[in-house]
Amino acid sequence: MDQDQQKARAEESAAMERVLTATQRVQSAFASLQSQFPPAGSGKPSQFALQTFDAALQELEDAQAAFDEMLGDLLDGNR
Image 1 (tube, rainbow, N blue to C red):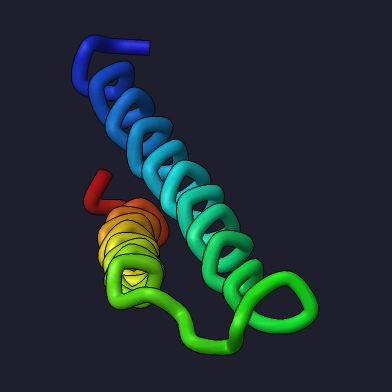
Image 2 (image 1 turned 180 degrees about the vertical axis):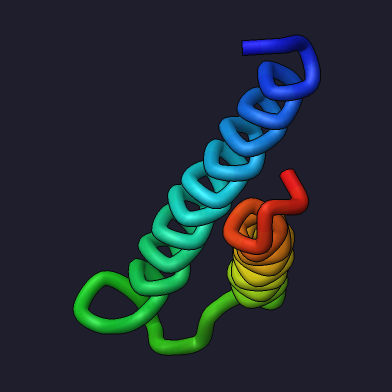
C-alpha cells in the first residue's frame, strides 16, 4: 500500500471514528435530556440540555454527511 492509500485509509478511519463519537454524544445528551422528564424530572428540560442535544444531533449529521461524501468518492473510484 503506497503512502496515498495509507493517507486515504487513515482519513476514512478518522471519518468513521467521528461518526461513532458523534453517535455516543447524541446518546449521552439524550439520556441527560430524558432524565429531566418524569419520573425522574419535572418535565421542563433545561435550555442547556436542549442546546447540548441539538448540537450533538448537528455534529452527527455533519459527521455522517462527511463520511457519506468520502464513501461516495471511494465507490466512484476517486479515492
